[in-house]
Image (cartoon, rainbow, N blue to C red; front, side, top):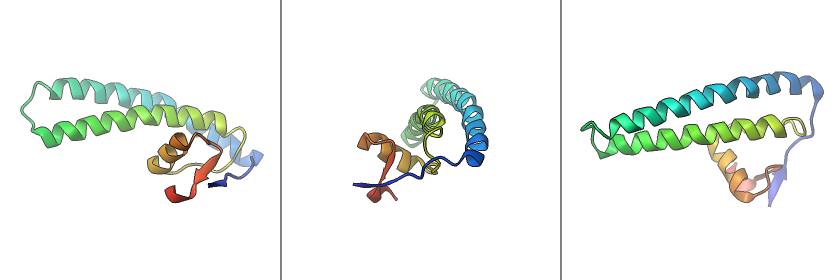
Length: 105
């Protein structure tokens, strides 16, 4: 069971939509750079802890592409912006992108 997101308010929609549209290409660039860094880090003796951090960076940046893309669409219908990756992942896993799982808050 989750809380419902607020319905759209037009004057908040435009700046949020612009923000999402700008975020998507930056997230794609970050994902590409993190993938390249991950590939090159495999050739370097940087330790398993750093390899794990590189993998987490790659997963997080790839998720941010999906997150920004989904929110660019959802923003047209609701106004609550999901602020953290934890809450965004909880919404994605719940299957209800219009509701926020209470335990994720």
